[in-house]
Length: 303
Image (cartoon, rainbow, N blue to C red; front, side, top):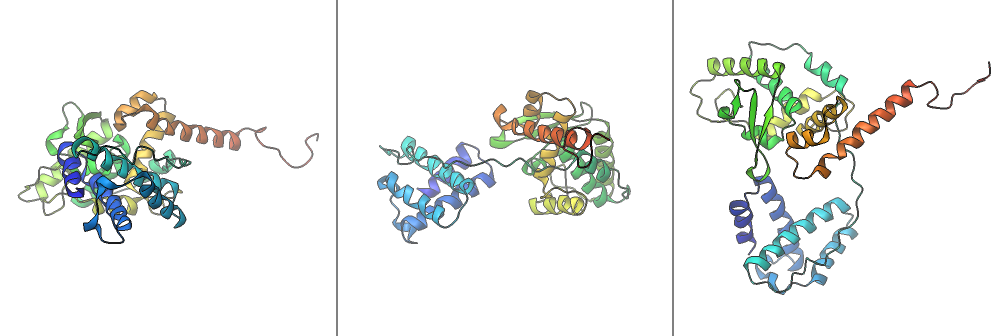
């Protein structure tokens, strides 16, 4: 039944490869626990809420974070919901599971001044790889795209005439992202170099390697990590950090929350609201640093 569930969320619900992989990894871990490492004996239709709580309690005792446990509970809920709808499950044992509370950490982002410094760096405008890698950084920061979206971006979906990208987001949902002069110039330079230096381009993807093959996730991560290394105080240096940077800088510079939600492709405005906490934190820090009466000073104030 795990295999049929995998097919269902991949083919019928159009979940991404990474989401399907995460769900199935969680469910196989649960199956191993429930059957003492004999998953072939698993009978999901006979599972009770107590059985599931036993696994969740085991993870908590092993020191798994509440965030990890919540994610694995979501995998269980999705699986048993599928069984109830398509496999005749009468009582859903996952319906009565209670989510452990978790404090949501604020997204990590690169400060606006740090990004300005990084994008001001010189680079060889005649070198295909250098131009491509600079464009990757600029596109993440200018559009807020996810890694998967950039990886799968098609050349046909990048319109110079309209200055728009057609992005295929989660569950293959399309959205349009506009771009400005700087990104327009870099896209034009990249395309000219790509067409002149990469022979026999077969891939329909916009971003390719020198051999004409499309990029892969790990390569994109290396490009971003290498660019940000030593250039930011941000605790992480991943493509998603640039997505967070895009959102926080949009709000800091006057964009409304609904517009940022649409650009990021968030289903719920609540998801986007976390960035308002980032902008407030930055506002608070700037106040503490700049205002002469923001903090108590030592010495004689009466002098």
